[in-house]
Length: 454
Picture 1 (cartoon, helix red, strand yellow):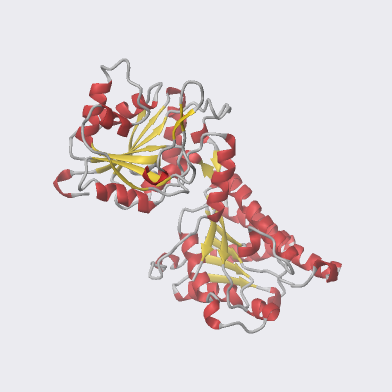
Picture 2: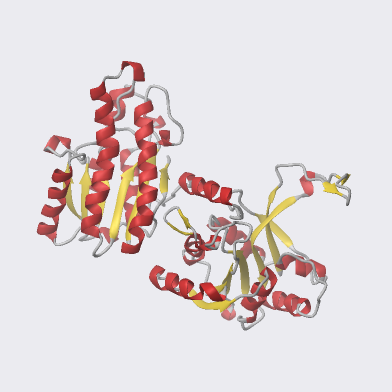
């Protein structure tokens, strides 16, 4: 908390009915990358160290669902769920009316902007040290034209001076409260957001901080597809010194553990006190064999009484033109990379669903675009990502999380076998990937592709 009892409070506006979206389900409650849109948005503020409190404004029809989401998601910063109005302005007014005191920093954010980043929140909070009203914006990539009643151009503004407005918009509480008090008595008001109120009533300057182009607003059905792709491409970044002590006495099953990334995961987890159950092709494990994988998990349960995390690094890559690959070479990649991931995920769920846990599958940087001479491998990794995203939704009610680790080119025996000796400084170290993998297991992330970069 800030000095002098000044709090940083997020108001999330979640009253929209989704009229433009043409869906019976309001867009803030649609599933996206393993969670509801509103859950992703809540995560942005719940996980930000600078936010003290969250207030949600929603519709009467959705209050019960909203309260259920908060309870099951353990959103401890949410203090109130308020009934909103028929307009954005009315909902924002309800949010600010619930805040006592004029000096608090208030961030008003659209529930349907689930890709908000922590840096944008930081910029808004920091700007409130110097300004009482702050907007978020990004440069316009397109030329903007102004037209008259006959749809003829009257003006082409200088694009360098234009910004596309986003949220959050940030205010000192007293200023926003004053703006809404004035608006409540203005029957002819035509303003679409809170910063517009400040300008309309001449209450002061509105400073603009940089937003982020990924912070899109889900308005139309096509936006869901775009947001889903952005979640796929979103990088998961982890500090090298993040504490892995939470692995102490956890039970981690590692498949593909004899070399490369799997071996690094096993060694790092053991170093931090985890109990390891390791299996690999060299020990006779075939990840595509349901019976073998099920036996591995059953044995681990008998030995330790539980399993907390499952990591499947088993993979096969054969480079070369498809025309020159035999059925056996193709099938080996399909069976290990794709069927193996399916089998491991299915069998892991059966042992994790009672107490919860996390699964890490492995993608590849080639999953977004197939590469010549490794087309089959690329296809299997794209399939793994789609598998993970679908299972994230299926497993969510059971508190079983699943993500896909997506490392860039990594120094492993499999890579050397296919590409020969490459400059060491051009490759990611397997230990770095192992650290990122274990840190993902310890988080609440699910349904995400986690990029690991040098």
